[in-house]
Length: 109
Image 1 (cartoon, rainbow, N blue to C red):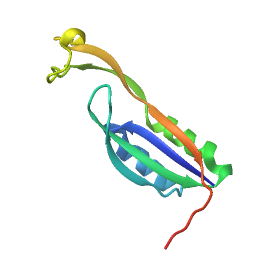
Image 2 (image 1 turned 30 degrees about the horizontal axis):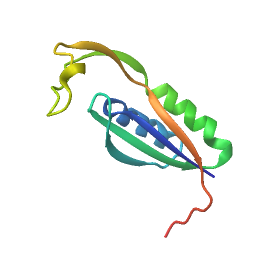
Image 3 (image 1 turned 90 degrees about the vertical axis):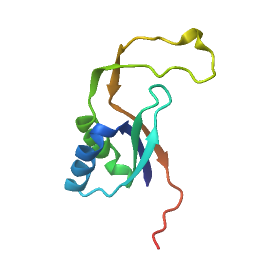
Image 4 (image 1 turned 45 degrees about the horizontal axis):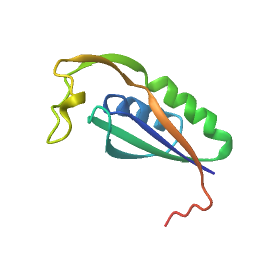
């Protein structure tokens, strides 16, 4: 058994969760915050059998796409202002960061 943890952008969460349900996978959704953009993310946890990991990864890849977006950086609060960029910049957002972890035991009470 494996635990798949996918960190995705909030805007991709609904379509990913719907696609997982359509294919019979149960999941847990957690709110999270990204360290670089300081914006909302969603972390999806999916427990599945070893032989279904590739299917889950294909679903995630198909629903979480990269795209470019203009962002306005947040001014530093009391920190070092040397690296602060005071104007909007275009960055790549979206996609998914996925961790596949072994599960020693699984219990459902």
